Image (cartoon, rainbow, N blue to C red):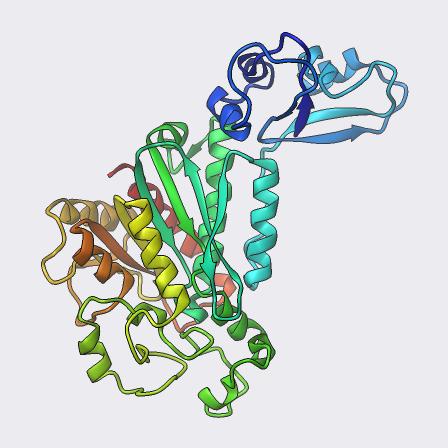
Length: 388
């Protein structure tokens, strides 16, 4: 919601007036500095929408009483002679519908919705997919400790993108309304941690799974790669048939030698060289640029998570894994016979904590009917990742 400053106003006054933490208003207006404001500045108030009061025979005092608002909150968005009046209404329910076939357009639209209503979040393109789709990173928070989450490395695991976006929406509701999430107040996390999130690493592949060969835009012969099968539900790779989670320089040569597909395929082909794909490169460069404290990569399925790699994981990883296991009921697995994944490379490169979390149980792609249960379990891990 946007208001226009009056001479003598302060951001701290807007915080009191609308009961929104002052740092959220400051971060939503990075070009406005604390102090007495001049008249006529546009000021964003996060977590509110303007709603029209359709009754023309009501005055501001009556509206203030009905909506439990200070009169001045109404004066900020109305002229006394104006009809109909606008009413600042606090956003108390999720803005996003994530229980749907969650494609790239859904992500794009939902990020626009959240950025508009919660302008203290930062959305940045970190690179482009093979077909030129932007790879979006979302950041929320202002702490020095940066914790990273990602989803949809694998195309038919697109439900992980929906889980992350639902969690992001819930986090935003919590910090703006002072409500708890999994029994925890989220505002301290906002102050102490920066959450980095790439909800959809493989947008081309996700669209291929959900929309079919038309998603390839005639730039890649995906039908040939898929053995002329027009159904792409089993496709894990990017649009060029390269498994993005087999692309990293963590014993990549072992995966290259032993993987059965020796050419582009719906799954498991690690590429002709490591880091051959732009999506994989963008994620590597992001980790190097942001200096992540830890990484949580969401996949499906198995209701388990992997937390070690070749003994490079730090000692505290075991304690965090135990906490995740106790909170979610997911099984903690230290080592698996797998290499060249994003989590593997991160642990090897930085000697920090990394997880591959296999959400849900069944056959990929998991059905949307599993979404509520998957979220109920996984949100406990996502939240625990912030404080452990």
